[in-house]
Length: 362
Image (cartoon, rainbow, N blue to C red; front, side, top):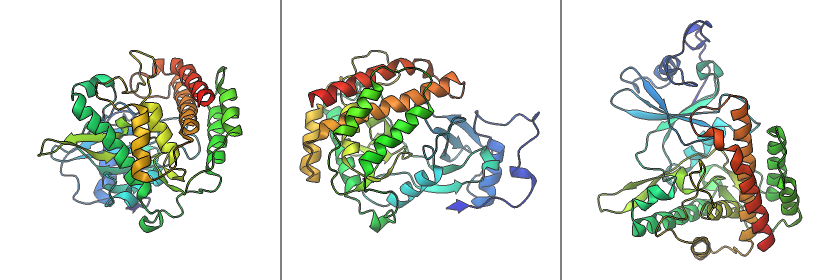
């Protein structure tokens, strides 16, 4: 649902500078409550409380509740918003299209593009119970068998996503698949330039090498763009098994080459060689399938040729290096919210080196 800007004067208009907004930074609960009462009368039954959900490093995610029900609010970061990188309309559109398919996503409730409410466009969706497993230690608590099933289930969910017919769910014009990989390389090069505040050895070499070895893309699908274990919620079922309850963080989704998602998943299943890092893979958890098994399972279930997966994995290392550099740049400007940003910058050279090695070794 898209809510039009409220024609009435005061409630959604910016407050006087002396007025302290309610709620965590970036989320004014009083303005949000007023907007929800107008757009979705009866949804909220009491005063709202809110908290920032830690873990995200790009768009901001908040849990909001009224004492009896809970919802999730997504909005862009507070500053340095790059073009198309934090598009709430696109995020809302893709989860609305996929809701009801084999791909588990939260139900979207409302999209607001009136920046007078929270200072930026945002959307509201249902709250889904589940755990985003971010570290090997968290996975280890599940035990090796449950860990193995959870990670293989991630591959199966990716196959389900890539099996969705974009035209059938209203996403036929969601992207431009022709020239997708070349355009992606150019786009991430521009993102790097827009967030570049220091010299980064090897990143231009990696970017150039990727451009000289572009593979031929398979038939286009909906791609997530940031598909990994901590972007899904996993919860137990009454039968004692674990299932993926929701795929989150669709900010990079589009129509394009599905193997970019596979390359990213392979990257996140590889060992970074770091300890106590704010960005980690889960590969060292007991029972975690090796990258080769994930590739084979995807190939068998999807029927796609995965012989060029090394290129896609190297591209994933490059893309993450650019993303992390952008986050580091925002941190240096004081425009990040939450903990763990102070060490992001030191990870960027690690991702660059892994990208170069993956591409060179094939």
